[in-house]
Length: 321
Image 1 (tube, rainbow, N blue to C red):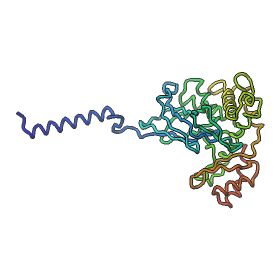
Image 2: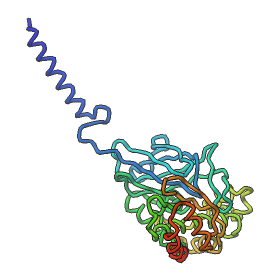
Image 3: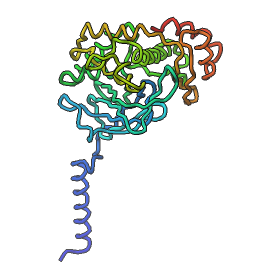
Image 4: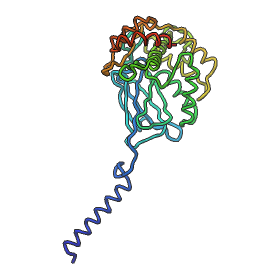
């Protein structure tokens, strides 16, 4: 018969071996030495998209995982979203911003909220630490292009580069925040110029959707005729813009020319300009983007010092496309 001391030693040994076994097989996903969590954050804008469902989907074996397996969240009132991969996933992803019954988006040309009734996507070649991805009609073009082939880091990078090259005349940079950020970029005139330019180009999409006969639905009907509401017209225009890429890295020259002409012939003046103030709050003043005085006033009211705004606005106005 074992002594009490012997039984105690055996029990302790069993517990130690069981703990080691659990650690070796993950113990519910928290194994020793496992990768740190990664995250994907960003802003969805056509203009700012509020209360929309966001799916961030791993791209596995060349295609996005099923929607039911994707990390999910909802955009805030500023269009922001954020999800985490607790297992430290570091591969390519597709982000989908999908409508719900309460989803709204800002029409930059009026400042009014209108229903958000489409899906916009973006792709990223890899996730590392905190990866920022902005979802706009322009990122949707790149996501649609990347979907035309096996999706991996190389093909995603090629699709994004091809879209940016094709839309260089509009100054499109998919990595630029679609709002002006005085909290983080208040002294960076180059970045603020690109941010204000992105807002201007998004406004052009709204204008083209209801004015240009070059953006058409699949039947060839102009979007301003095919859509009876501003939301429907914009959704039609975004789909039409998708068609400009015939392959994952190859624009269709005729369709690209039509899209570029439709956008470049629009001249946004009064635009609801989203601005992140130094304290992080969001303002959306109506600004005449062709007026130095109007832009300067908006920046000062949002918290930019007057002496900074005076010099910076000239640079910004000259840098917008």
